[in-house]
Length: 221
Image 1 (cartoon, rainbow, N blue to C red):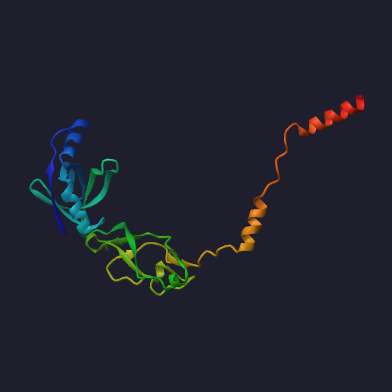
Image 2 (cartoon, rainbow, N blue to C red):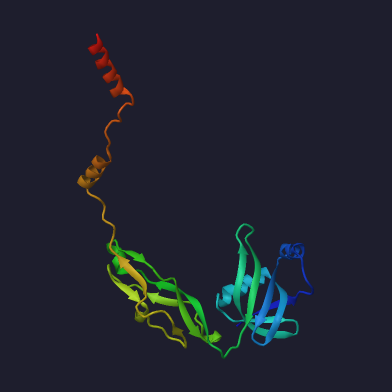
């Protein structure tokens, strides 16, 4: 379990105060949840990123808040892509004996044999709903696709997992499949398509009327 230090923010802060805080490499955050009252804190952005890389998105963090140490998970965080900066974090204090349901990413392992014949791997599900106590939530769920041939697929019920957690998705939900390669059109099909798209020369507006006027003039003469 990784540790992270925080500093309590005192009083109400304006947008200008928060902007200044972020410019110094700190991220405003709030701690709430089990056994604690809502507390405004700030953490070092670089240290926070290191911790997340270590424990994963659903990992448990030992957060130092004043003189206390609180076990938390990251409930949510905001990121500004233009500034490449984390702008706010929500830390949720947790009960380590209480189960939670979270999204866990699916990680495909191996290379499907069907791809050697031109097959294409498609992945309808990138995350699975998992229920477990915080310390038993997996960082990811590996799915071995190395034996999949063209038209083969794997569903939730096909996953072999080891761990004290439950997958909440429907057993029939498809996780990955190998679809046949897209056939290239033949020369005859290409020529047929080109023939269908060819259009006749556009009619010149007024040409028919001019011809009719010439005929009328001849009749008058």
